[in-house]
Image 1 (cartoon, rainbow, N blue to C red):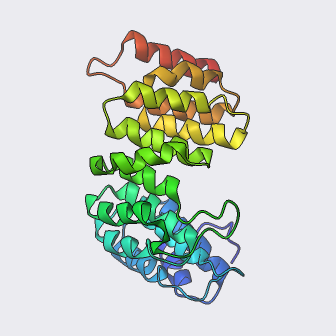
Image 2 (spheres, one colour; image 1 turned 135 degrees about the horizontal axis):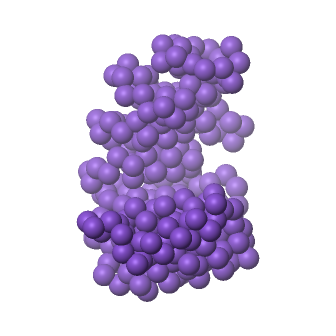
Length: 263
């Protein structure tokens, strides 16, 4: 079967139990993409979190990564304990996918585990397999703690504002915007990121701003050098988080006008 063909739920679940590693990987992605919440699909994805067959040359687990991402999108909180176990997987990218999925599920039960990885990064001694060889997916962990409202993490996250990797510094600013009252300070740090010479970093900061909905960043988002599609997504996030009960204000109309100018 060509992976470009449309699957059915039955085929995707059957593929996950099959021998074709490519189809297994695609089917895990597919179940997440279409947010299939059937019990048997969820159980098949949970089972895939234990897969030992699909390995990269450096020991990674691609199927586990896709399964973790899919479970986050499916949105069933019962899988939280299984994703928490993945935070201790030897594959750096499985830990990253698990942290991102836990952020989507918004269950505070995972906060202590995320805090431990941030406070004791060497507790799982399997760093990223390429530069900058990070001990943990710090940006994913920090962003999850921000979304989960983990105010007890403020002091720890603040120490990452000086991290050598820019995207981790911006992840810290994003989380601190969510966790503290000093929103403008951290929002302005993100605006500064929109002026980075690194396009990939500007793209990441656009996602950060859209996630927190910092209204003061609307014009800088529209002005930054990046794809209009990404700028529109960021502006959409700003708009959604700033719409008041009466719907239209001068600020929200201004954001809509910026969106129109990018279309």
